[in-house]
Image (cartoon, rainbow, N blue to C red):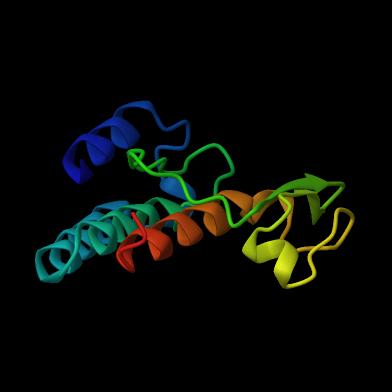
Length: 130
């Protein structure tokens, strides 16, 4: 995956200087980290981190979906530049912990929502919930 992503970024990225980032070095670093990774999810996070160094809202990594999606018993949405709970499933862990629609959920913003979602997804799957 890293090789394909690296090739596509080099071929299609609009800034040939990569915002001053040594993208080759970041890819090389990610490759070394992936080789040392003890899980698929950790390897995926290194790919996401390499792309994140471009600091570009249109260049990010969407990892492959798992067969199981953990919902935490609630849904959330960015409104303005803050993250709010929009729905809470009755009898869920979120409901038991007092989450209600309208609550601001986690410090987050529109630009970083994908990072939050990726971290939550990888954390759940790496702990064996799937």
